[in-house]
Image 1 (cartoon, each protein chain N blue to C red):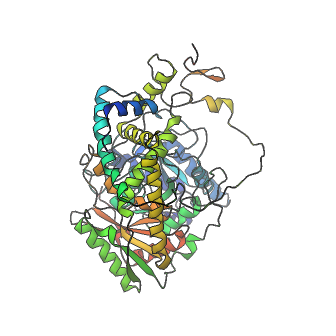
Image 2 (tube, each protein chain N blue to C red):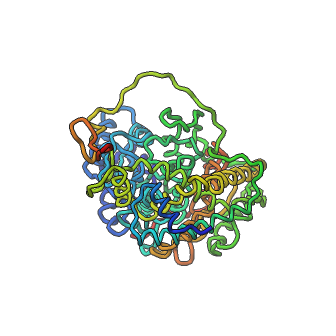
Image 3 (tube, chains in turn yellow, brown):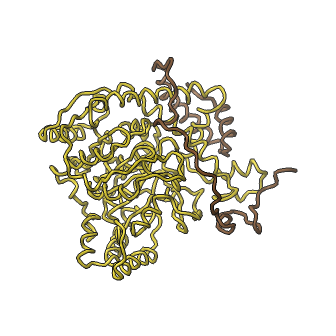
Length: 483
Length: 95
C-alpha cells in the first residue's frame, strides 16, 4: 500500500479500500521508519484517523468527494495549520499554534485530503540539508548517513520513504527542487504568484513559493491542481485561470526545443550527475526534440545576488519575532530593547542569525546601494537572460544539484559551500519562473540524481507535459528505497 | 570587503540580536568570507539597469473595502508569552 502513488490510492478506494486503512498504512510506516529517517516533527494519529473516517463516512453517504479524498499529505512545518504546532524548525516558534489555516491547507481540506503530519526543515527554510533545524537532522532514505537536501528535507524524505504519498514544501532558492533531486522524487516550484503564500511563514517574500513533492508526474499535476489559483489574501497572488494540468499531462509537446545552458555544465558539476543529465537530454532528442545551446551569462552571479536579496528580505520579515505577541520571550529581566535582543539571540539558530546579520548589513545606511540595490540590478540581468532563452526555447534543462546527496556534517561548518549546493536552482526564483526536478538516474553508489526543467512564467502546464515525456520513457520514478 | 568586529557589533544592535563575544568573533569571520564572495557582483556592469524587486510585471489591485470577521480575542492572545486579561503583557516602555 505505502509504495503506491496518490492516483493509485484513489483507485484503491474506488475499489473498496477505506481511507482509514490507507491512513493506517502510512501511520504504520511512520512508526516503523521515522525513528531512522526523521522526516516528521509532529504527527497526530488521532486527528489523521478522524479525517480519514470523515472521508469514509462521506463516501458511504454518497456525498461528493474532493480530488484528494482519503490521500495522506505531509506538510512542511513552515505552513500554518489551525490548532497544530507550527515551529518552522525554530526554537523561537517552539510553542506556536496558529489560529488559522494557510490557503493551501484550506485547499487540501476542501479536497478531502488527510493531513498526516508536519515535516522537518532547516530553520525558517534557511539551508540545504535540514542540518539547520533546531530539532534534528532528517536522513536521506536512500542512505541514512546522508542528508535529504533542504530546506524542505522532511517533506522530500517523507515521500521518498513512503511515509506519505504526497507532501508540500516551499522553495525560495531551490528548497523543493534540490531535496526532490537528492531523494529521487518529483518536486515542483510553481511560478511566483501561482500558489497563494497566505499562511506560509515568510522568509524572502519576493522569492518564496509553495509546491508539491510526489513520486510521479500524475500526482504532481493532481496536487498542483488543488493548490494553484488566485487568493485575495496574498497581494502577489495572480488572478489567472488555472489550466487543467491533469487532463493535458499525457499530451507530448511537439515540436519541442530545449535550451541547454552551458553555464549549468561547468566546474563543480559531478561527472556522474552530468552523465545522467546528458542521457536524459539524448532521450528527449530521440523523441524528436531539438537541443539548443543557450547562455545564461549572468547565472554564475545568482548565488551572490540571492544571498543579498533573500537575506535583506529575511532581515525585515524576521523582525516580527520580538517575543511580544507570540514566540519565545527571554526569561531574563530586561528593558524593552534588551528583551527583544535576548529573545532573538536565544530563539534563533546560528544560520538564521547569520542571514539576519547579512541582510541587515546589506540594507544599512551607507551599504544599501553597494549591496542590496546592486544585487537587484544583477537580478534583472539574470531574468533578462531567461527571457532571451525562452524567446526560442520551450524550456531550459540541466542538473538540479551539482552533486548527489552529501554526508551529514560534511558542509555544516562552511556556510558558503552549503550555499553553492543551490547554484543551479537559485536563478529560477530570482526570475520568478517555474521549475521542476524529476528523477533521472542513480550514482554508482545508489544515490538519486535529478533533472531540472525550467519554463517561463505560468507555463506549468507545458512544463508538466514535458516532464511527463521523460517519465514515460524511464522507470526511475518507480524506484523506492529499502527501509 | 572585510567587515570589522565593531561593524558586526553595530549590525547586531540594528538587528536586535544579543550575541556573545565568541559568537561575534565567529560572525565577523564568516560574514567577511560571504562578503568577499558577493563582492564578485562589482565585476558586473549595471549602468542604466533598473533594480528588479519583483520578478513579474504586476499592477496594484484594489479590493472593495468591506468589513469582514477578524480573529476572536482568545485566539489572538492564545500564543502570548505574557497574557494579562485581554492584553499582551510587555516590559515597561517608559520609565
